[in-house]
Every structure is written in structure tokens, then in C-alpha cells.
Image 1 (spheres, rainbow, N blue to C red):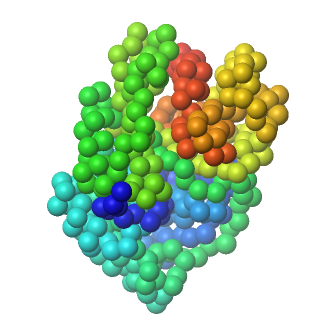
Image 2 (cartoon, one colour; image 1 turned 60 degrees about the horizontal axis):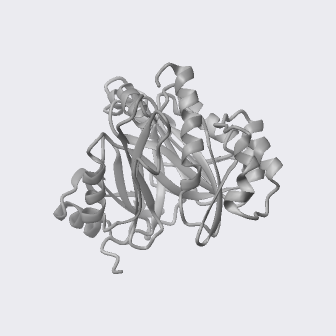
Length: 361
């Protein structure tokens, strides 16, 4: 298929947070990110502070206001700490921006150049669901580390094998999933590669629907979820209530050694959802032979699913903020290109147990 909106990759994910210094410490000491860049009062940035964190091919920017009245402050008040920007690296920012607007996108900010002694970076931004933005970035003419305005830092973490962003999942309101599916198709040239309805993703009490969108080159994948009718409040309804509308529900980080990665994350205090031990008693009957020791997977709570091209291992954290909104998935692909459909029921029952503890089911 022709790629009508070429995207090289996800360049970085930007979080808006109340306290970027403390958030950077958390991501450094729990997830093992290196702090490699900083922009703030000491570098001439007078309104906000930004920390750049990296691990292998993953870049995270943590941004916080440093003065009252900053436009990011009401958004943090509304949503809590949240993923505000999923930025794309593109070949031609101006062309990509004009193309997106001609196809119906709304601008977040106009194209501009950021310059320093190392060259220039071209940037622009378009709006997607809720307050989420897609920045468009090209740094082909920049010899510096990340962006003009950032001071290089050398504050190493202890990396634990995270290698890239596998996918980002968005939650939208009931009846709006197809609207945003069409937006990604029409504006960014994505295509729908998987669809899950309430028969695929349901428990006794709750259900949701999801469609997985992928960019023309297949490098960027965005599942989009909406709630479905059930006996009780679904995880998507809970997210929309506490977030204050649509937004990024979770980010999946890929590893090539999930047992080591999850073991170290748990040792550093990251809490994960757990499924009943009975899940592992029938695991081999459901997915066939796998390389990993099932007892070890059971001890860590790692789930397994298989498709026509191989299998995958995955696990989901509990929310990493005070609100039951943003969480992380750790995923290890051994050929599989799917998203763990066989784990949905066990996973969502685990989420419901957490909802019951919060009193929000």
C-alpha cells in the first residue's frame, strides 16, 4: 500500500506533570531511564521546565510549569499528570502539517524552526482526541543531542532492557471510536488492522470495543478504545471519569527479555496486575510450547498469547499516578504481531478487582 503520510517513527512522548524533577527521579529510578537533557530557568527557559529521559530508542520528555498562569497548568489540573504529546519524526514538517490540515486536522501550533549553534530543528503540531497532540519533527539539519534550548545532562539510570515504544492506547467516549478511526485513516493515512468488539473484550460485568490503527509503514500502532454497555462501570468509563475526557490510557514498552525486565521493575516497586494461578494451569494447552518456564511466568504474573506468526508475553502495571488513568504495558514479542486477545478476559477481570478496591466498579 502507498504510504500517504510518511512517519519515520515515534520521536518522543511528552508528559505534562506537576513536578518534573520528581517525575524524572521516578522514571530514572524505577524504569531505569537516563536523564540526558534539561531545559529550565538555568538555561533561559523562564516559563516551564523540561527533562529529557532516554533508554535505547525510547525518549520521554517531562514538562512542568514554573510560573502561575502557564497554559499547561489548567490541563494538569483537569487531567492530572498525563501524556500530552505523541510526537512523530517526519521527513518534511511543513508538507506534513499542510497535508494534515488539508485533510481536516486542527493545528496545535504552526511550523517553526528552533535554532542554536548545532543547527535547527523544524517542528509543528496537530490536535487529535481530547487534549492530545501529535508534534511533527525533523532534525535532519541538527547536530546537537535533542533540541535547541536543552542542556545535555549525564545522569545515568540503571537500564533494564526497554528498547522501544511498541504502541500507545487511547480511550475515547462511547460512540466516538469510529470517528477517531476515520480521523487517523483520513488525516494520517493509517489503516485498521485489528478490531475487537464487546464479544472479544468482556467479562461478566464490563465490556469495551477497540480498533488497532497502524501507520502506512507499520512502525506506529495506536489501539483506540471506547466503552461498551455492561452491568457495571468499565475501565474505560472509569478512565474517562477520572481523566476528564478522552486521552492516552497506556503506553506499551517493548523488551527482549521480559522476565529480567519485570523482575527488576517489581524489585524497584512498580506494581502489576495479577491473574489467578489457574490461568497458568491451562496456559500450555492454550498457547502451546513456549521457551519460558511457566512457573517463573506465574510468579511474576506475565501473560502469554499466540497468533499465526508466533507468541507474545505481556504484563500491565497498576496506574502510575494517583488517578486510575495512565499505566504501562511491558511486552515481549516472539514473532507475534497481535495484542493479546487471548488474555483480555483474565486481564479485565484483574482490572475489575482493582476497580472494586477503589470503589469505582
